[in-house]
Amino acid sequence: MKLVKTLTAIALVGLSTSLAFAEGDGAGKPKGNKGDGPRGPRVLQEHLLPLRVVDNLSLSDAQKTKLAELTAAFKKDAEAWDKANPNFHAEMRKARESGDKDAGKKLMEQRKPVMEARKGYVEQFRASLTDEQKAKLDEGLQKARERMGEKGPRGDKGEKKAPKAPPVE
Image 1 (tube, rainbow, N blue to C red):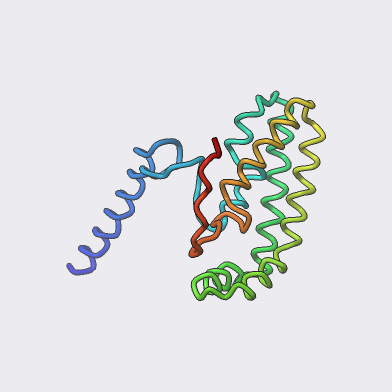
Image 2 (image 1 turned 90 degrees about the vertical axis):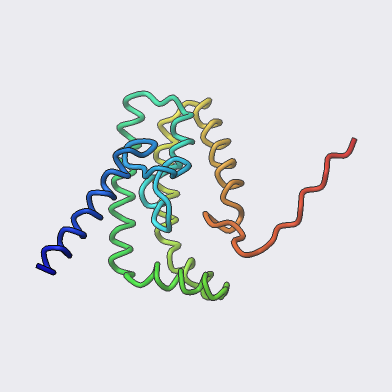
């Protein structure tokens, strides 16, 4: 009888989670999730480019197909790297939580091949864009970098930034 109650509780938790996603702000996004998509350390593996940047490019069907192909190839490369480096995310979390910036830099250096692969795929995609789209891409990527901060998706987490100076009149 205890086993039946436990299994029922597990099933209800699973159902509740499914419903939270189904009732969320968009397809696959849990309710209350702000932004364009998934969160967490692997978000940069899900998409070759930030979704809000891509949405602003007004891509043709051929360009959308090209982006999908390149994204799939990048995801395959990133997943292969993750399988070859299964402890990376745990080690990075540990370095971040302990404030060990040297360890974090060393770990990111190990991840450089994935980031170089991303750059190559982005350049291949860029070749399919018009000059106007290239300008929008550059502007969107710059804004994304500013949102993320110089140090990546988490910005200067834990460090206080100096307040911006008021405009001079």
